[in-house]
Length: 267
Ligand code: NAP
Image: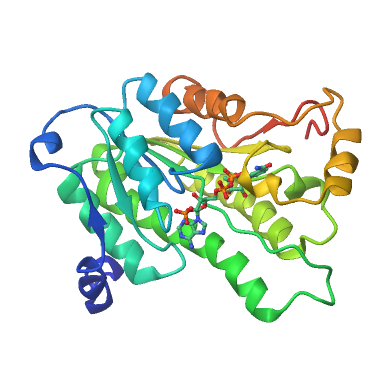
């Protein structure tokens, strides 16, 4: 029995919820799924991909109102829920996508979670919560490949990693480990899929003006700005622009990490 068809998966299916209307399933448009699509960089990716002609699955965990409102504003799109730390909810999400969309052409693994604490103060539970997102992206990608992309023999997978996975950042050891690992995932999967028309890349943002960075203390923000040659944080739209390029063009870009950070790190 495959993981997607396990009892755990069946239980999870009852938990998943999407707001797609059956008539929309047959629209024939390519479909992009953006995890954590209700907020920040994910929301900007949803808007950019809709502008490129995709029907967008706006995934969320807790930001239901934002995800619904965004999907409504994009027209031929839908919102869909799952906690990516819970494998049975991922199984359910994939099954629900089959009914709600029938296809997934682009997967943007954008959802992320961080706990800031220095090494000695970081708890094992914090580590697990941060690292759980890495496992979730891996398991969701597996489901999307199996159910959709390998059957269609095409697809684009874009992982949103981070500059700090390359530079390190004090107080963020689990987060930087996860982000460095995500870029390794990109490179390994791109090689595994060699010869198929499924391209896998990472977009590694620098410091972007979102709720995640909004929580940083002012002195930390000032220290960050001092490290950015362009002397400002980026916008979610500037990240989404690169995601849209990789999703629609970029046909000879594969297994790469594209840095979007105002010049603070070039790879
Ligand atoms: P954000 O607005 O806080 O977005 C994080 C998203 O992840 C939320 O939409 C959240 O969904 C989702 N999420 C968190 N835990 C989840 C879980 N267990 N299951 C499902 N979804 C979950 O922050 P952001 O800045 O836009 O970050 C987006 C991505 O960019 C993240 O991967 C982050 O690491 C990366 N990044 C951000 C920056 C930056 O400067 N902002 C820099 C480099 C990389 P709900 O709200 O629905 O719970």
